[in-house]
Image: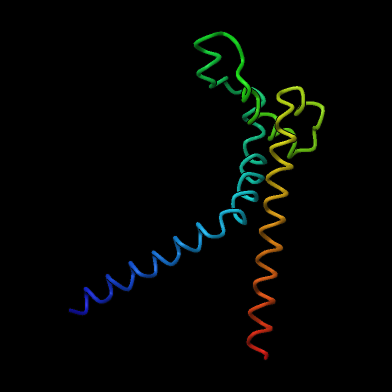
Length: 119
């Protein structure tokens, strides 16, 4: 009986963690992408082209060079990032905007909770 209680408690905790991660997706996704782009930078300079569209049709797709562009942008090489794919700037700006909005919403919610508790 004790084992099932522990097991159900673990499931409940896991469910809460999963819900929390999904609810705060905008807060952790952008920093994760920045970190991944920062770490992947040395490999993206000489890595292979993995675009299926380009391999099949020998023409670049709209997303070709986006990963490399984001990696170069994170390292401050704006000219190279735009050379790989101009959309990399748009992607980073839209992710930064979403992250900023989510951060403001979280702070606003925390202030509202604090005000409600104080009153």
